[in-house]
Length: 244
Image 1 (cartoon, rainbow, N blue to C red):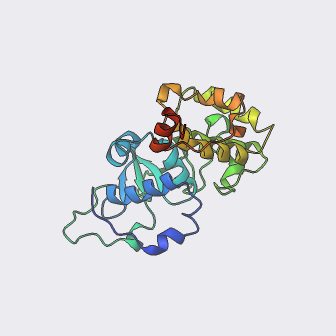
Image 2: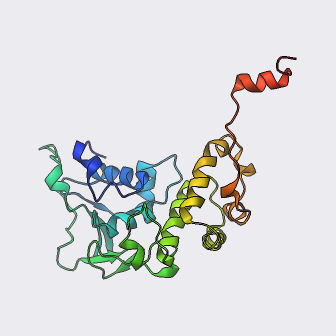
């Protein structure tokens, strides 16, 4: 890992601000993992250990998101997988003693770009996922991550946002089916905002007491009334009977 710089303009960049915060953080982390030419090995599990050792983050999916935006290029050379950051040398000034890159670039002889979800042959920034991949679809690539269009692709994208937020990640397939069904009853934004409102309360519960995501969705829990958790002093006051 290497020290890199970050410019204030990064936080207003139109290609960056539409990304989920964790994806933006991964993008910054890639700069530190990359060599002086902005290249690194495409090893999601290793990147998870290096960048998010204590977080439940789907690095593979987040890399796919960055690739669809054209912020990184995923490619193979002689069967080895690599990542290149196209704008790296424009924005970074590596130390003069930093070793030269030994990783071939995406324009090297025999290099093949990789579509999102690991399929070879796509053009950089135009990766397309199949509808059954559980991630993005061609329609959703044209949408911002902050929108949930009525097409099926928008529902799938919204589900990934829901899945990232939900604190208990079990039975993802069942959860996606329940989310799709729930989206016929209300807007996907209503579901996600309902979850956001309940997250502070969930964070105080033991993990095993948080319902499975499919259970939460099937019970339409997004519409539950949210009560502000009581402070420790309020709980003590209740125990002793208040002013009585």
